[in-house]
Length: 276
Length: 338
Image (cartoon, rainbow over all chains, first blue to last red; front, side, top):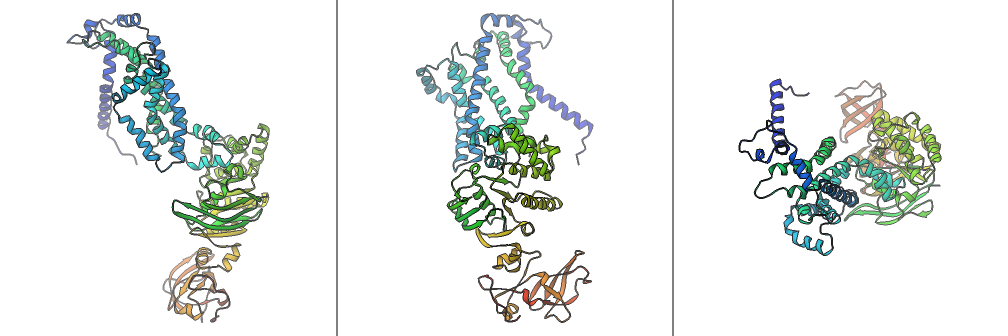
């Protein structure tokens, strides 16, 4: 039987949930509001919340000074490219780990995850030199490769978890029915794992879109994505808060819209397997 | 043709020997049931035949050809799994057609064979449904349909009815038996349920700890179990096994008598007190504490007006006594006390 919840308690919980959600959302809201203020208003020690002279001048300046669309395109190519390349590598890898595990599969998975704990700056110099010597510095190809490697452990782990949920007997049935390994993966495993693959894809697009360490350090101009676009407006003196906010809003808007429309899929993906 | 021959087939996982040298010939068209307690290796043996596991040593030949190293798809066998193992994202039609699609059959051929299988299995109205919209029995029929369309040399069933409720199990059991009558294809059926084994099999293979204990027709196993394990496993309720002085009287370390082979008489040699008394209508099952013998299960007619605590005299039918030696093997010849 469901527990009885009093109306007062329900209201309190609702209020608390809204409070926490607003607290988390507040920095984004503040950035959004600041992007419509003048630079003077933005650094005012008594900031106004809604009642200020709304202006679009920051957006105009930002668009005049830099090529938003070029950065946007770079972000799209890098995040989608690295996610797709990652999936191509991770689907067979996760298949073998989930369905034909060896003695060291668990160790291998842990080792892959441990690479995520390595401070990125520790391998910056070697990776930078490698990129320079192979001519991949400041290229989209270079960033796609680096971000694929950076996010591969997460992609493999997520897919591995989804694949583990699929009963092995179904794949054995496919084998009995005459399916080759590739048709088994293509016609049986992948369609069954579509929800999992979709949420893995979404999460990794978001991770790659927001990745700033490698994108800032390995690019200069031609392959610079939106993270570099934002960074170009941050100055140590903090004089361009409003323009920085305008740039940030423009940079995060596409991924926020994507997240908004795919939130059901994302939440289902993140909690998949928690309850049978 | 679907003759399957196993010679010296062994399987170990790590250091554990699961299948310990099995020799078995299954002639074309026979319905063979592998039966045994859980962990006896019956499912592993079936998976070895299917090719889902590799043998450690030994030879499996199908249709006279060595199939030991062949992948599952090339052995010409079809398998029905305990969990049905249907493809959840495909309709019933696509599930049944999947093996044909993998074999590269034309769309017309796929549709024709799917329709034929659906007709045999009463699935025609459900062809466009997904497996999740079907009942357990219907799902199992889809799994069988998927096996039929391949026209395999043999069908392998891995405990296909254990997920179904009791009533459905009985009707599916009959359906599978009828299917065998119609198709006359070799079938190997794994179960731990000896009633399924007795009712369906042409021949039963009793397995225990990776070894074959006995192979024979259901009635052969019932009438002359080769050893104590088979004696205890086949038949319900279980055979009574008696040791000590009473067994020694018949010249054997262990004496076996089935519950249905003990009569209630006024001058029987055994005297005892009724403990539990179960009235099933058609039968009555009694647990009797017999003096000098121990607890004995007795199966008598349905209209026996006995109650807990009643004193009874019992007479085992002398020609139905089974004698086992110290190693548990059945002893031939008439019992001296009989």
